[in-house]
Amino acid sequence: MAEAYDPNNVFAKILRGELPCKKVHETRHCLAFHDINPLAPIHVLVIPKGAYVSMEDFSAKASAEEQADFIQAIGETARIVGAVAGGYRILANSGANANQEVPHLHMHIFGGRYLGRMLKKEGE
Ligand code: 5GP
Image (cartoon, rainbow, N blue to C red; front, top):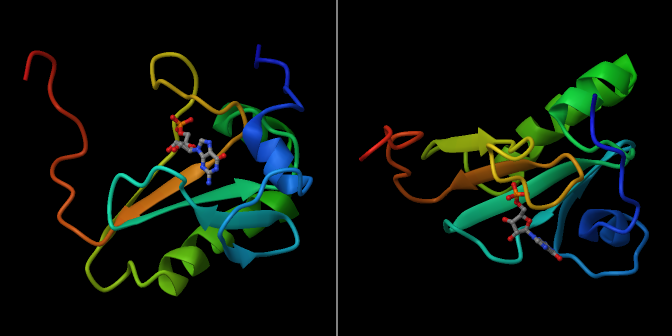
């Protein structure tokens, strides 16, 4: 069963306007903003406005309209930040094995440099 949503997580506070963010794009159901601790020249986050912990939670409970909006917002955000020409990576961490730190679904968009292989093999 999915973890209960914590309304005090940092992204919930950004959505309520209690914390600032450097906004890149906004749609009816999503917000995109720069990551506070960027790991690449381009590092932005796209989040649904609804209270979803993870992709598991979102895919099970969000409406078709919210899900379509999320996919479109990810693509449009990548275009807005200029990630498309050089290539980019999207990544969503879910749960403990993925080291998810903020329990509100977010898609990372990384770009602006060569990003290497997607994961190190065990022992590498
Ligand atoms: P996760 O490990 O959960 O996939 O990634 C969480 C991301 O959220 C990290 O890259 C971290 O830098 C970012 N982050 C954490 N707190 C804030 C914040 O208050 N504002 C912004 N813009 N990003 C944050």
